[in-house]
Image 1 (spheres, helix red, strand yellow):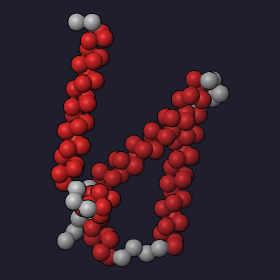
Image 2 (cartoon, rainbow, N blue to C red):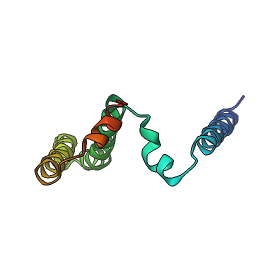
Image 3 (cartoon, rainbow, N blue to C red):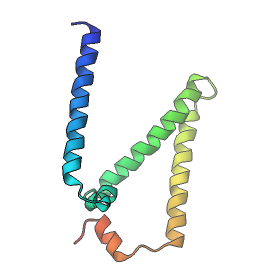
Length: 112
């Protein structure tokens, strides 16, 4: 088989898997609240990994083109540090301004 054939096969399999995930999500989500909060089914570790990957993605998106353009090899580090500073600022400001109710914390940490 040629490379083009492998590409088409992979793309079709990828589409089938994505449609299957969409179908499963469609069956499980019953309301807007389910969609927005995932019924509190994600724990703090999963959310932490999701936030970390989001920050790394942003740093890569901003840092690698700058590195390629030879602006600075430290652009990736600057993007990562900038993202972490923004995240830390958001956390500090939210802790100083708003106290979360106990019900929210119980949902976040999956306590019933």
